[in-house]
Length: 126
Image (cartoon, rainbow, N blue to C red; front, side):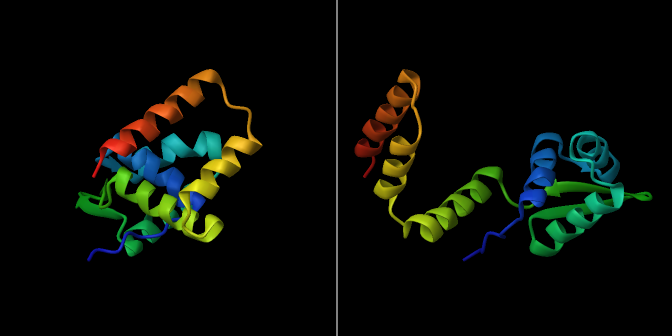
């Protein structure tokens, strides 16, 4: 069974760019992230290397540049992160998690309708 890598918050930001722009070079990622993050190019290259080491990214050498693409689908990484959060914070229970968010936030009518539809659809699945 394939283990989905755990990624840090900073690595998530890099992955978002890769998922959106792949295949892309380090310069593409740097150009996308530097203005909003304030990170130096060396920091972004370090994050790219960490993601390769974790198995979240692939790369190919194209002349002097490296071209990156995701090795893990966005949905797969989201699922693993959500499952980890659920286990760590709510002992794996969906009901306590939903109760917490419903009780601690003001939900709009649209959000309530969306949640009701999700629950209805969940009942239909075996």
